Length: 59
Image (tube, rainbow, N blue to C red):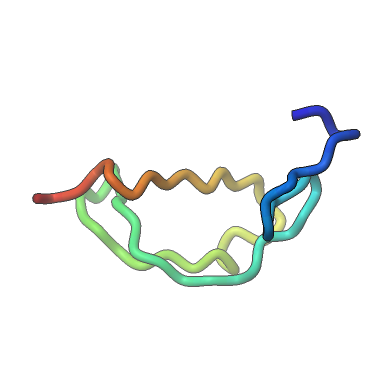
């Protein structure tokens, strides 16, 4: 998406938007377990938020 374009969806993130602070469970591949992460722990660092609701399920 070009920076000059805007998203027509509600609550669509744009370049340079700040994410709201939150805590969530995430899989840690180094410790090989699910643990709670806090976005505040990554302040000042580059972060990629990746999620896909049907992937990585333990069903």
